[in-house]
Structures are given as C-alpha cells and as structure tokens.
Image (cartoon, rainbow, N blue to C red; front, side):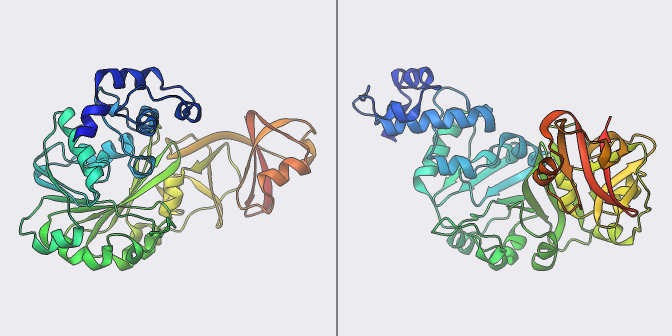
Length: 383
C-alpha cells in the first residue's frame, strides 16, 4: 500500500494536476521531481485523469488512483454504468469480474452487502483504495472466478459479469465459449446462486446466437451512446417464463427507448411507400436489434423497400433515430462543387464514390441520401 501513500502525497497530486495538459512524451524525458515516484507512474495518473474527464468524471477527486491504460480502456463509461444500474436493489450484490470497478460502483449502490471479485491483485488494491476514498464499502476478494464459484455457499440478489473479450495475445474474441470466464460453462452455477445475473458483452455479438446459446434470458439490452453501440447486456432470471424482451437505448440523446419481443417482429408485415414528407433513419441500437419491420408499425411509418431500413411518413413522429424533412431530386439537379453530407443506404455507391462521381464537397447544412425505394434508386435532399 506504500505506492498509494507516495502517489497521493499532496505535492505529487499537485504536480499531476499542474501537468494534465502536458505532452506525456516530453514529460517522461524530464528529470524526476520526486525520488520515490517514477515519471512513468506520474504519467499513468495524468493519462487516467484525462480519460476520466470524458469517461467517468465522478472519479475526478483528490487521491483517486488510476490503473494502466488497458484497464481504463476496458472499463465501462459512467453513463452506461448508471443506465445499467437503474431500478436495481436488493440484499447482496456480487461482481465476479470487478476490473476497475466502474460498473460495480453504480450497480451496487442500492444493495446492503457488496462483494467484488478480481484476480488481478494490483488492480483490486487500486479499486479498494478508491472505494475507501469515495466512502464506499465492499468485500474485496482476490480470487479466480472458477475457484470462487466452487467454494461459494452464498446466495445473491444480483451477479454481474464483464468477461474479458481478448485472448493472451490480445486478439478479440466474440463466441461465449472463448471469453474469460467461459459463460457457457458457468451459466448453470450462476443461475443456481442468484435471483438475477447481468452479463456485459461485445456490441458485435450476434443476438440470435445469444438466444440459442444462453439459458433463462429475460431481456437483451442494447446500449448505445450518441448512436455508437457500446454494450450488449444480458439479463438472466432462473426459470423465467416471461417472453424475451429486447430493449434499445441511445444515451445522451432525446430519442425514446424501444422495446419488443422477437415474436412481435416476426408477426409484422410492413407497408411500403414512395418517399413522403419525412424520412426516418433508425439509430444503430435499433438497427442492431433487427426490428426492421416492427418499428414501422410502432411509429406509424411506411418502409421504402424490403432491404432498405429507411422509413417515411406525412406527419412527423417522435422516433428512435434521425428525422429529416426531404424532397426527391434527380441527378441532374446536383450541382458540381456543392457541399453536402452524404448518406448511402442500400445503394451500390459508397458516400466517397458519390462525392467523386458528382464532384461534391463534403459538409454543409444539408444531406444527400442515396437509397432505393420499391420503384428503384432514388436521391433525397434534406430541407
């Protein structure tokens, strides 16, 4: 624990705060200002504070210690952690893959007893120090997950896991059997000791694969931040008889959440139309969900084409995505040198190819949307 005493010394913390905007490469070449703290350790803390300012600002407090960059990169953001924590409470909470502890900090707030498991001893000591600094208590256990599950005799109201998605060579892994811990090998044990289990997964994982591979899924949550899908979260409830619910969320926007069951999507046959006054582009969380037909029914919209996930209506709807007022134009109306933002959906040309073909500049206030309706290729301009 002497490391924490050195790095949190007032003069060291002052030096870190004064160099938050310094060039770290140049800083590392400078003479050490403190004999017992290396410049690499100081640079690690500066980098941590820089990342925290954007990703988890609640940690921008005096005496907080930051781990190496990889641990910060793998940690959830404050906004996604808070979203996952909504409406959660109970007696006992267990995080089996604590990491830097961002998710655990928020998920566990309304639980009486908190247990954090982490096999990286140095990382767990950092979390333990930070939680003490923040005034939060927990049982901190430096242990291998499989061994802990073997000897555990307790029951929990909520278990949380964020499995490592890279192998020892840092290559990305997506199948559940390749993750660490192996979800498929441990799911029965998890379901037997918890009322609910939440598992954070890669945004690239296939939802249909999850539905066939994982038992007792009550809900699949797709969480995006400003239209970038960040997390897929499984909610497992033992022996659930509820219909599976898929929920999409686009944080830091005003867009509504969207929930549905796969059966609802399968039952819908959408109506089609040529372009009307408004055009709708679903956000990426909705597109990830695969609810391509159901959203037309839910929001009273017409689809442009079976393979074009764009929608239209005469009246503006509150939508989970972007809404444009548009008009259809011909290629002859596009003037060389004009500036547009270009969108290509179900169209043979990419935005870059369109820009080159029509000799357009990128940017400006309006969009050109190249797509297909049932009558064929169309070009739309936003108004």
